Amino acid sequence: MIKLAISGCQGRMGSLILELAFKDLDFSVVCILEAKSHPALNTKVAHLSITDNAYQIKEADVLIEFTTAEATMAHVKDCRQYRRAMVIGTTGLNTAQVDQIKAAAREIPIVLSPNMSVGVNMFFRLVKEAAQRLPKDSLVKIVEAHHIHKKDAPSGTAKQLAQIIKEARGEEVKEIQSIREGEIIGDHRVFFAGAFDTIELRHSAKSRAIFAHGALVAAKWLVNQKPGFYTMEDVLFSQE
Image (cartoon, helix red, strand yellow):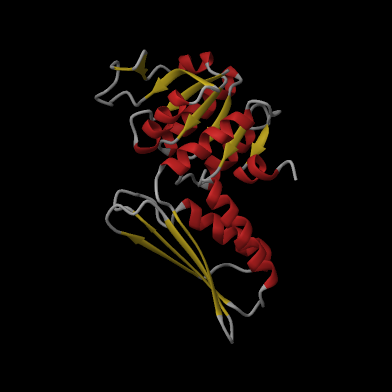
């Protein structure tokens, strides 16, 4: 059984991950973390007390992190110190922070992905294939839409799509449109507009549970890996 710690356990994603982990017989949740200022601190969820004491990460095999950049980087240091694996779904990380995560991954296994959804990562594959095979003179546009509470724009998923296309075509995506409306969970569209036709690839999330489920899939895979920096592509396609 995998001993699991969850950071941001009362947040949108953390609470979903906790709910699914409680139902998954492969996991035993041993630590649930929140910020020092959180009103739920020291209250209980089932048999567990919500804590800000990162030392309890030591009791886990793997930590799942969907929080802020600041909290994530603090926990990267903790996991590195305690030699614990880490699944990171936090978005809004800057280049220097990603570099620090990669440095930590030389000592512990880390999965970092802007989107943990299994479906989205298949979407990444399809976009890569299209970018490689379609005429280079096609105009490329990315449109992403999320709920009004999302702070970063473009989304981490949109940035990842742009990077995939850049690597496949050797040029930057010049147009990325971000929409923040209502309670949209996550919608990403990629357009390849050629001289004779336009191809649109799209992924729409129906429930945030897809991201929570993907994070747990990543955690199960990661606990059996050597130290290294991994993505969801590694999690899903490493056996090919």
